[in-house]
Length: 485
Image (tube, rainbow, N blue to C red; front, top):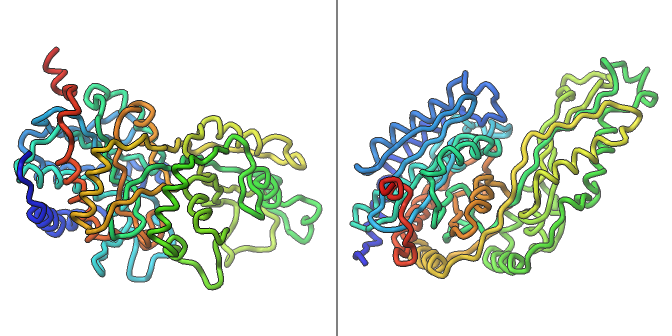
């Protein structure tokens, strides 16, 4: 195998981050390219196109000579960016990221903002840098750093989508459209996940799914003076609360539908226990609790399992409720609540969505008008057994670049692409990782990218690609198969 200089690799990657990646991410953060679920007029506004052009310009300036770049577009859908890097040896690797963003969210510190990039204490603040605008730049940096050291690589396809934060509704279409180009990956590297701390390489072994919906309760054609109507006219909010109690025990947070239930695999419980052995109280202290607030359980193991494998309901938005500062004594005509239900890995989101709709809309209290709209449904994912070579390589990479052993973690978030690929390619190996560690607060205020961690993570990915075992993979790449026809 080609001699490999880890120090040279790390220096090259660090320099690229400082001179090229961070400045590009500063420009990217300025673009309010919210995902289509949060900005229906995304196409007319042109922010998504602006982000795409930034990515294209950087990629064309930094991709290897023989690489091919293309953008797939279909009417009414977000684009798909593909960079195809031919390999010098057998194997097919897919690297994934996305370039759409969550909405602004309130609560940013006075000197920060979602579209205001700020560099402070080795962190880059702003929406989308860590989740996960860096992925494209880091992926090409890995390839260039390895090629500089004359490492023979397998074929690598970098795939960047623009609708992930909406549940990847456009991705199945493009997966079919690009099936020949994607081929059958031997290894999938996803840079859209989280970390337990910033001291080692973390890889994700499971993800919860997601069902997003809007429940609306109408009781009147218009608002009425509360003094003349309350008590006689049922409150739309009370009815909504009553309906939600069909889904959730409000005293415990326990979800009540059997369709959302699974048994957590014992090996994932053991994995979580190992993680807690490393992080200790940090699994609780990482949250910005207010004074005297405490978690739903005092057992750290149970707490982590609740946020990574159990189902949970969150109300994430509302309509029909005026701001408190402008709310008169009026019985409102309707209440609309947008909710997010995280579902365990291996739960079918389609069947679960049907069950939720059935429970919410049957037997309408007082004859109120109850409507339910399913906004988003994405499956969770549970990783296949990690191959020995990949497990050994991840450990070696973490010890080389962090001087600490690697660790695995279950994540409570959702990456729809992983479930799609896991179903389509059950024999494929996965390395799911990312920079979203303690305090990074993706989707919320004060989101940041931890730059030193991003540099070391990029080096770890390079080390793993360098270890890709060519002798175990003998099938030609999609491009080779096309040439042989």
